[in-house]
Image (cartoon, rainbow, N blue to C red; front, side, top):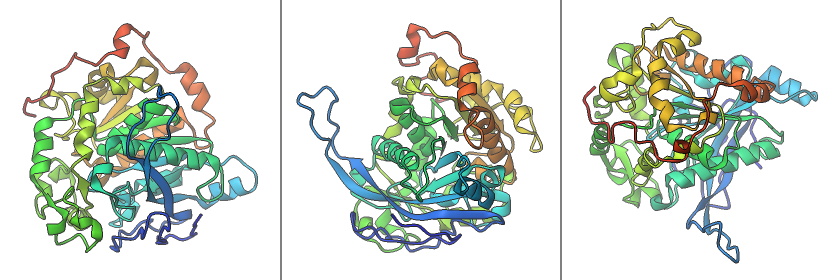
Length: 424
């Protein structure tokens, strides 16, 4: 186990999977903030399933897997760490999973972190965060691209939850863990929850059970093989044609940002720090139509931007809101009730789905000028459904509003357009 009590990442190679540091760019995480400490910054071993073996196989067969590493940054307030060291309850951990072409910097950007860092805001609120580069991104391992599938990503998140609870991240057991995803990261944490339901809550941002397929095609049209990309540093994995990167200058053409709500300097950071994606990761879209998310039985919250043309429903109708950039989380939820109404048929009633819409924001709600509304809404729901030490988890589950379950809750949801092709 490798730890570093620093606000500057400690880059440590993994003997199990070869050199973990294949991208030496300075992503600037974890950022420095008063009262923040990061007792673990380094690489955690994970295993990617190579072949799925049916659970019913007799005799039981081991599931073939490939070793890799995940770069992880465990941060919390000095007060929370001291309380845990003195025998008090350790803080609840929110495990942050970024989307395609991003990394740890999405949740903890080096550009004006006092304004934009979700990590710092959650730490100040009393939570611990485990901010990661998914396998295939940033400082994590870059195995054969064909292995980096949604199921493999969900499995690695499952392994991280187990490690947190077992005391294998920094030497402290963290019994309460919540999942927070963005975009493809939401697809990953929804899938992990549907398969395992082992977290205490799951919060998604920038996603939907009806992702706009034409916008997905637009995203793929901006990609080129990573080997041809001038920003990504030389690395052996770039020879794998399954690794892709955005052509420079094309990202502002996509719904990542709503220009009126974005600092132009953030667009430069976005282009400079982009990470690769793999051709296999968009397979997550199939989960939106097969009823997988009806397997989620833990408290669930969804946050989308008003102008997110990747994730909003027909004509953008599911992201209607009357709230403004000064609204508190309670008002954001009330004013954005159309999102919960639209998404609810895709979830099991035990998910107790709730939702909020962030005004004046596109897909990357955490990187707009009103990013505090996203982090404050995450904290607001986490407070109710978990609590900074996990004390609210059981009471919330016992009292959250859930409609009666029916036979339809085990079937694919066919109540909405498949696919959603109406223009926003």
